[in-house]
Amino acid sequence: MNDKFEIIAKTFQGLEQVLAEELSEIGAENIQKGLRMVSFEGDKEMLYKANFCLRTALRILKPIKHFIAKDADEVYEQIKAIDWEEYMTNKNTFAIDAVVNSDEFRHSKFVAYRVKDAIADHFKEKTGERPSVRINNPDVALNIHIAQTSCTLSLDSSGESLHRRGYRQEAVEAPLNEVLAAGIIKLTGWNGECDFIDPMCGSGTFPIEAALIARNIAPGVFRQGYAFEKWSDFDQELFEQVYNDDSKEKEFEHKIYAYDNSPHAIAIATNNIKAAGVSKYINLKLQPFQQFQQPSEKAILITNPPYGERISSNDLLGLYKMIGERLKHAFINGAAWILSYHDECFAQIGLKPSEKIPLFNGPLECELHEYEIFDGKYKDYKTDKDNSEESNNRYAPRKEFRVRREYQGGRDRKDNRSSRYGNRDSRFDDRKQPISKYPRRHENKESD
Image (cartoon, rainbow, N blue to C red; front, side, top):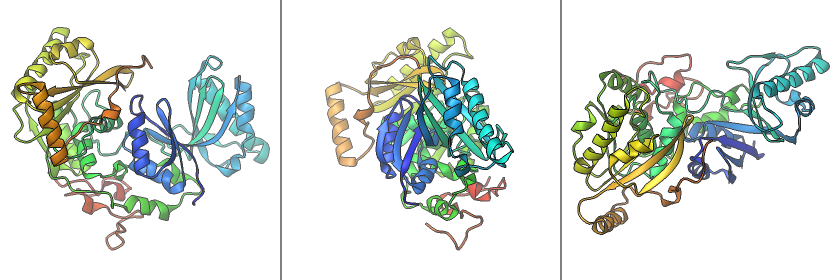
């Protein structure tokens, strides 16, 4: 169990540093940042913790083999030579996910096809039977990554992408990815030291992720399962320990405010917030941004306005102009962070950003802008802000994350345990009855 091995955590471009810091916090070793990934070393417990605890990881991979291949035939031979009996049998189902960035390999589906053939032929020659491919919920999920001629074949320990936390009941159109939302909050440096505001909350992703960060509740409490639970060396007792460890959780003494002008979005956000068990911390209200008022307490504002796909250009520019006006009049001495896509939209805000961070929202090359709104002279505002942060330990932005655009493109509860992994109900305020065959995953749901 204590044997250490290489592990890879995948993430979005722009969140590598945040993910590296998360890995350091949970005790990972030999952490190395790459493009859209961070490699590290750890044992089986660390593999479980990475899946269960990391907010900014999309999936966790365990490399089986690194090799060089110049064509598909070489890939086939290298994969076929692996001692596959160590990882699966001919009775298991498997699936291949191929990620290719190479001049030699142009089609990821063809690469996946050749990997599939290599594994099937290996078992055919050894046992006379081929294992079956199963795209959804296979026994063994594999990932082949090719960068030019460098190839890495890995076991996918996560299965379904880790952004699928499990609390989302419904979503508005084009909802913000949960991993991206958590990463943005982490980039700002907010960790629950003051109030949090999202005036255009949609289905509630920012407020929910903020509540989980403020309480330091692991995002894995909502998951229905992980791919590693099907592995032959799965240690159920060890995973119970990881699952039931709440020693790092904390209290949250401030408030999260979430607003939206759509009754439909508010209804969806209400259900999602209840499912996450964090209603106690979130004040949800139907209110357009035009009615935003100066907060009574110190707060950070983070929001993701529309990008224009569903509204006209004139309305879009007018929306961003209104956002700038409300911030200037109703968010004095506060820091507002806005994620958007179009430069002309940012220009309409009419404020000079103090920071710009490039991020990808799906295929869209976006930017996260910080606006520090102050009354009077900036020098006086900055002095007061620095003194407040030092004396009160309140929200303090993390300078190490602030970069300009540099790239283009691409506790054991045996007494009340209700299932095999225990019952984490006491971490949440209210709950509904379980809604799936995994009651341990869903007993955090709140009552209506």
